[in-house]
Image (cartoon, rainbow, N blue to C red):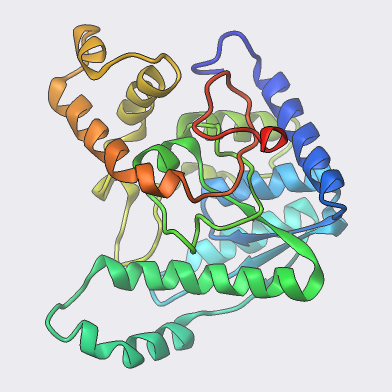
Length: 279
């Protein structure tokens, strides 16, 4: 793997499949539900869940908003059909409009605010939990280690779930594992793999609007998180100081979120969170 020379991509995949099964067995559960956004992270989690639990035990919920692109819905449907899993489409536009109407006094003085983005994520979290409660299916979190490290996620929204399936994989490793899953046939659509990462919570949003590019972010995060290096040591290794300081600020600002997220399925020696078996 990109950062873990001591473990192959095959072994990392096998570890995650085994830990998903072990978690469900320990919880005496058999069914899972995952929010399908049309992005790479939810696609990988869905594929891993299908491989671990069987397609009949995994359900996807597509929750498009006014800011979701048409291809995101199309890509999610394509993914679900390729994986053989069931799915529903539950648009959240009307629900979101009602929230904004009721909270209009809070936003009268601004054209847009991050809180409006987070409302969408929390609506989706509520819908996933409603399905979970109704049908006894555990919600699988789809956040990766890069996002978790720098707080790129919404508490009680997309950071919710029973377990963080890929919370110990950096974004670049998510792509690597997707390639492994597609080794024999295209189970995860190429259109998902090649699109620019986006939370789709405002018009034209891209991850790169808020974060450094992942090919710059992930190596620094790995040095800090897994390598145990100080920021000065990372800079001394040839990394731009401004980039390192920006990432450190993001990490420090995300610490309170990291303390409130679900247990992670680990593949590395130094995960951000303890493995579920250690809780």
